[in-house]
Amino acid sequence: MLRIDIILKSFYRRLFSSIPLMDIRRRNLFHGKLSSQAEDVRLPWLKSTSLFYDNCTQCGDCVQTCPENIIINGDGGYPRVEFKFGGCTFCELCAKVCPQNLFLIANKKTAWNFRAVVGSSCLSYQQVSCRSCQDSCEYGAINFTPQLGKVPEPVINSDLCLGCGACVSPCPNCAIEINMLTKNTPITEGNMNVS
Image (cartoon, rainbow, N blue to C red; front, side, top):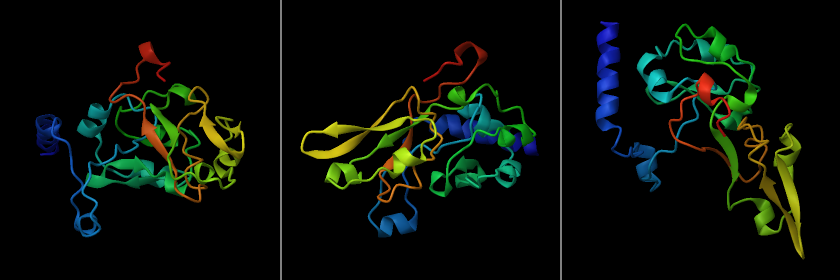
């Protein structure tokens, strides 16, 4: 019976993959938030998104083993990373504990195609000095460039940013998001330098 469920999930996912999903939960309708769903950040080192959705059993082993407690059960019970709880240390435990063959562990740089993006609500753009994101980035990916007569503004070096999300939760204005660079680019041994 489990195999039939996996086949049906795969069929419906492919059937409706071209239709943009809308977040129409009651609380979002009430607040007037009827927008396309943002891309969830899935676990690092996934071979491909479709393989993940087709074969993940939603067992919760990755959720339980994450030492940072940033992996949660998302929509449909599929695990996803929630950066408001902290950043990913790329400890590899989620990939190692998974009973399915969904991961290809390489190095931190190839963990996923997500990188940090500073939004317009950043306090620096409003002439308020804040460097909490820079202070939390252990990779030195966030720097502040001096502006003549203004507060320095953040610049993210995408070559240094690993998309770990450590800069998200310290931001007092929730101005930083982790966004996908390219959609559905599978990580394989042949393209390990995806950026």
